[in-house]
Image 1: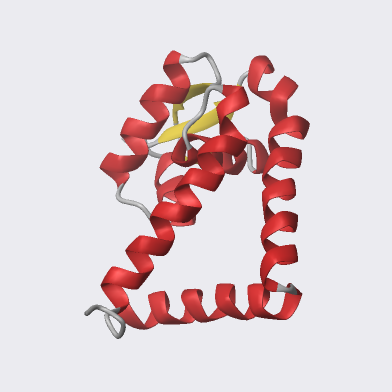
Image 2: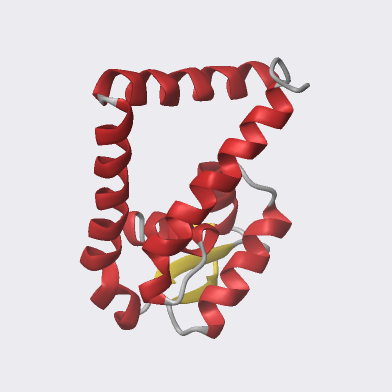
Length: 138
């Protein structure tokens, strides 16, 4: 019935991928959104909250909620930006830095596994197509 429906098929795929990433981030006590958010902060310590939202392609309010959870777990610290007091600088804590390599390795293992299932070309092509489609909808 929904064979040609982009919404149905992409959300069905998203649910399947969510289960895979949930298992990958579970040992760290993180949800997939928290895991990717923390990885972004670890990759760019001191980035602004607005930059984080842009990087993850989420609303600022969604970034705030995600950061609330990471901050409550002691994984990030928010401080006011000297340039714009309405902005927060996001910095990983020592605890976050301790799990950085393992978190990236867990994520890399999922990517490798999916590349093995789909093949490198199909995997890379799908990612590029998904990004191109998203860009056209912006």
